[in-house]
Length: 325
Image (tube, rainbow, N blue to C red; front, side, top):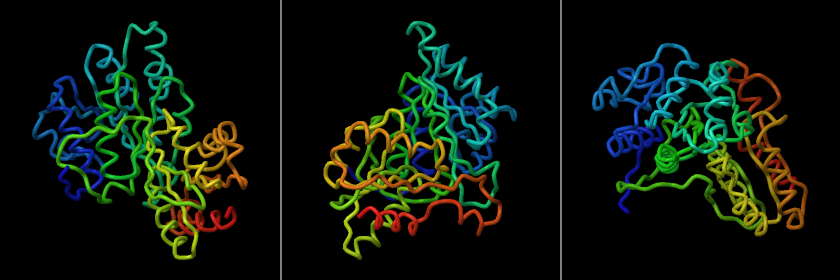
């Protein structure tokens, strides 16, 4: 395949554009996604191409956005609903976990809900506790939802296309600090199946299991560790539900030591789920206790220096790896 370097948000735009051209039943709904192009310009120029009937600017009501998208999905469309910040998704929680996630089950399989809910989470922009949370554990806990958290332009495009084509509701979480990041993306069409992790860097001494923006921090840590004689493998989960347990076990079998990195706070976080999965599936492969590197159990502060003090960084990861190795 021929590739070019594009931004993360351009990968999102391309995925949405290609799927809307391919399938007339795909449409977008959300706040300020039209002429403004969304808060992070992920839908920029799409309304110019597809018009107001397929790029719907919604009122400021997350419950209305998800409720309307659910109804459209049940009627045969493939909506992509955008919740501006994951912090606001709680306002649509009944629609998400009681309706979207359960409709297929409650109808005995006769109804499908081909709906994608795009949102963004994470800290790093100094926008305080109401706009900076990592809430993926909430949604991973809801049977019936798939949860996707891409780290690169290549992954975000391929996974978003797969999510739009999926007949199940997908909660698609982007990190606000990744929108301007760049990477190679093929010019030709491709799809990344949900539930397939990716080794971003091979290694022999320890496996760093992570996802979303923490993949970048883990790669920086791995680069520094390599200079100090420690070979770290970085495994990017890409999707939390379904979880690629096979890839996790295979990596643990190669390195026999594990550090799990997640920006979310530790208590009740998805890092604990990964750790317990390893304990159940690969305990005999471990040569050392599992270490977690996570955010602190605190609301995200507004001040930049305080915000930086409560979320993981490469130094935290390096310290944890050295303790394990």
